[in-house]
Image 1 (cartoon, rainbow, N blue to C red):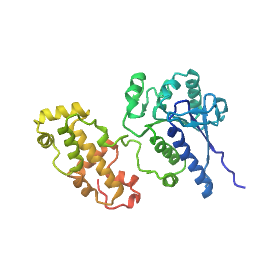
Image 2 (tube, rainbow, N blue to C red):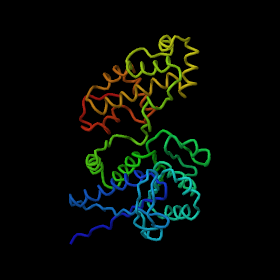
Image 3 (cartoon, rainbow, N blue to C red):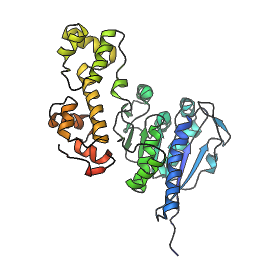
Image 4 (cartoon, one colour):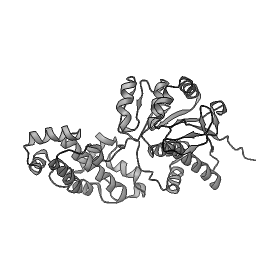
Length: 338
């Protein structure tokens, strides 16, 4: 009789005020992986998932939903493979609970990997697990995380980050992206794709993809001429979007326009234009088989080399590699260059 490997123990830590989807999102991904293993007869190790809290009592999430944990901290498996610390409005209070933070530190020292979703990063930081490491959290909480824990290298943009055995992710659905990446590491990409399809998710978001779209990354300006410039950029990405050209649309001098745009949006006009063009190019690489050169022209980069440099700066991959990873047809998708 074939030996059946023992399942990996996944522990998800919850507390009052936790974000419900930070708990149930990863739970559904790992449960889907277990169902896939059972349905296909894979010899891979499966998963046993337990939601744990400090006392095991029913707790109310930030949305008002009541969650009943499987047990308290004493009910944790002897050998936890993966510890996931959820986030939520109650994260600050939980991070001030010394007993809870000590438990996280002890489990993380034995676990193969430890992860946080959203503001769960505050609990990992309180335990000292993020000191000297790159980490992310929900963009709205990134500045606070950096202020409270200056030893942490906080990056507010990625959907998720891995630094050694520690994984951190942005808010809400990013926890599912992270869980899919963990399953892909354990099993393979095909398994993660099947789970993503079952959950009607896209397995296309690389960890270093921005948490927010380019149109949301910049604040909305107070002045209507600047808002009109933002709309124009999104709708005319292949046109001349230089500072001089945009300043004409805003009826301002180039110098005043550049200064006002940055003051009211938080980024320079050039940075905003590049983000919008990158977002459009990513969608075309993911959803079409158009040649890279044609996409570069359509998105206003001019040449494939210019787009290649922009992709390397922002995403760390060239367009052809991005398409290979995230186009549903894989490496067979269309003509590639750069």
